[in-house]
Image 1 (cartoon, rainbow, N blue to C red):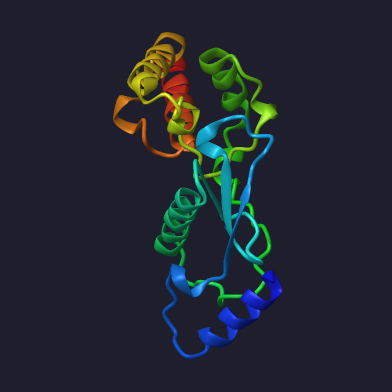
Image 2 (cartoon, rainbow, N blue to C red; image 1 turned 90 degrees about the vertical axis):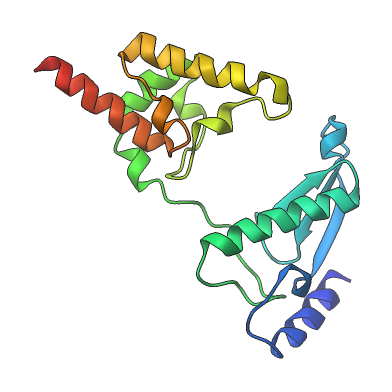
Length: 181
């Protein structure tokens, strides 16, 4: 059935050049092992690896998928043709890799985490470490991250908190170098 949906959407895609979410073949599924009601269902674009949405119902999962699709569309010049295979692509880590040493120290001191226990791209931001499932705690966590960074590095990151992680590590590294002088 998925193959048929993909073929139909692909054939229809040749009649236009600006595709929207509804032009893509989608599917939904249950997440029996997730354990959280908010992620009980998943949705994805058929043949497009990695672009998914989750929700407490199939409809909410499709809404989350549409949000992910729109984010992708807003940040990329070209969209893959509906129905075609889109392989899983990893975001660039060229910038963040330059700050591996300070990243190891930062993750240890600020998060009590092993830097090598995750993948961080040039688009990784500190809010990825916030408890998004508990919106009441987000501000407290944000303030704690800023406080720990100030405590351990004497660097205030309030003004760049929402910038990519590599920019925060760059600021910390530059402040460490300036302190040596």
